[in-house]
Image 1 (cartoon, one colour):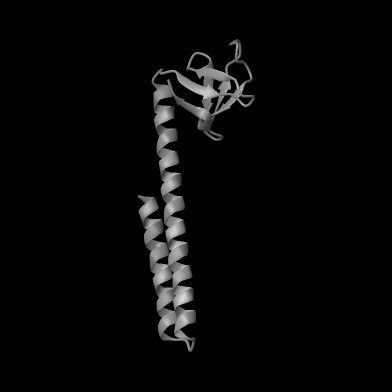
Image 2 (cartoon, rainbow, N blue to C red; image 1 turned 90 degrees about the vertical axis):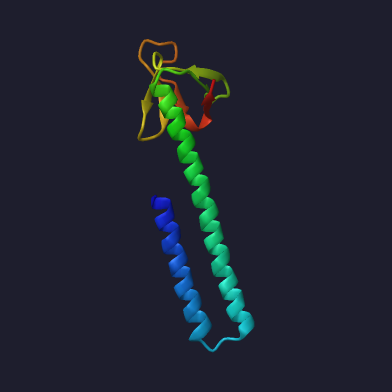
Length: 120
């Protein structure tokens, strides 16, 4: 929901700036249209970035849900090897969004980012 509030605030800000530039300045029409086009392009880029980040967050939430319910995730470790991540061998660290190998397991100390994982 915060995504939509952000987009609404940005749209309102761009609209106000565009109205001020269009109605209250002594610029040529070409310059006004150029500035307005740049503002609209900026809004579109913000919307695309926000959409991408939202999709990434949804994927991370799905991966964490599956991990916490006992499913096995297939991940790529930092050195390129494929690792099967499960609750028996790894802990999830929510602050950094990584899986850390548990003490006593064969993956002890291994850090695997959740971005490199997919469902098996």
